[in-house]
Image (cartoon, rainbow, N blue to C red; front, top):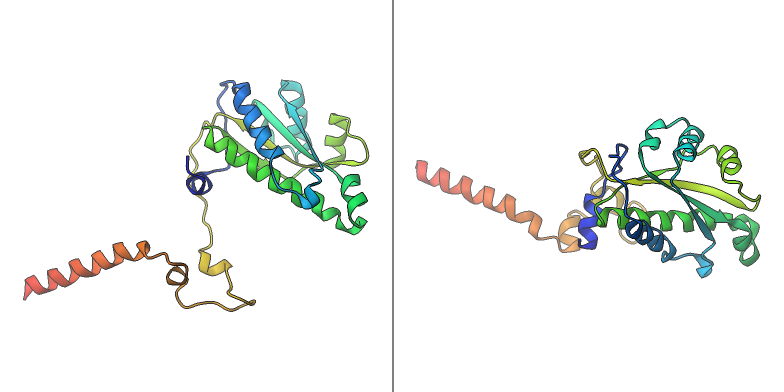
Length: 207
């Protein structure tokens, strides 16, 4: 699958079949997270692979009782090692830890979709509960959980803002009149041009 197609067609999956996920595919997802960029190349993260029914049930309970998570045969808990970041940067820069884990999570989500798997990023975590369940040391923080498995749903794409709504040029608030033209997206004009030509021909034939 092409990268841009993978990004455009990925969906958050919350319903899973009971089909087991091949270990090779799980390994590829974990490896995608490992290869993510990180501040200072610290790679200050650890991934916990969870497969047992009891643990997944407990994790779902610890994620604000999102019991749909139990259906996913695989949970991957993404943890940040904040002490590594604090040693390299100031304590106030622990935000880097969360940012690094977010980048790793996106890599994992795309790797899952590319292999025909469904996945969902869960950020609503009761930190103390997950810490207790996974026996995490004090210096390690659970940042997010990815559910993974074969999808049992085909959700419609959720509404997204147009690029015009989220992009400024050179400074805040500075928009261009035609963002598609500015970016060289000429293909989007073809359907409209065809429509106008058909309309003109139909008008001419009536005369």
